[in-house]
Amino acid sequence: MILPPAEKIEIMGILNCTPDSFSDGGRYIHEDSIKKRIDEIVADGTDIIDIGGESTRPGARSVATDVEWTRIMPAILYCKANYSGIKISVDTYKSEIALRAIDEGADIINDISGGVLDTEMISKLSGKNIPIILMHMQGTPQTMQNDPVYMEVISEIMMYFRSQIALCHSLNVPIYAVDPGIGFGKTPEHNRLLLSNLDSFASFDLPVLVGVSRKSIFKNLLNLDISERDTASAILESMLLFNGASILRTHNTRNGSYIKKLLNYIRGTNV
Image: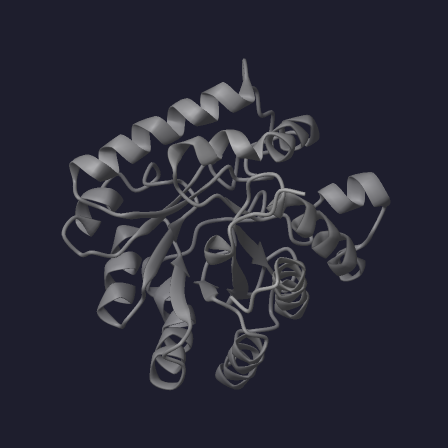
């Protein structure tokens, strides 16, 4: 059995401070519920918390910058004040949000468009010494699932990453990970090809982040409602660690912690 490197495995917990995210929209829009969820995520031993203030589900509409900031600011401040051991990632494609978040202590910017939707994102991160996660998305959240088409999905996304990685390097912006963007402008067959070829993206010598948690894959394959998808998500997430993934972006951080602890058990490590 070939095990993924222990030092590279990280669990990223999702915190959607939105009223309309596909899985947990509306659950974490009040400060008390946000703080309680952060406490739970940290208690699970999560490595990164990914805080978002705008839904990016298929068909979701963009929100004003001030609205997005108002939603996520309490979460950033609470994490920073109370939990120095967890990395704060901010899920945004807007450079203004990214800069505000960095000023308040964010450690990572997670851009679903990899710096494409806001063409100033990467240039404004230049010199900040804050890494970006480059995700691939075809189109926008409003249009991405209308009719996604690729001549060859793996090679096209590889070409996209080469371009954005080169841009980041030219502007002295560190890269935290690459994310092929499962479900973001992809058909079920595109998703299958990406998941079965994740190790292709490891060729960039960067961590590969994957987000399959509670996605429509489990509706299409297993006919599971959103509330029933956590077990199947954890099974697939575990499998993906042996296929090139090193960061799991997940809603169920308890399951994420189990995956990491069990992997370390068979390694004989406590990383």
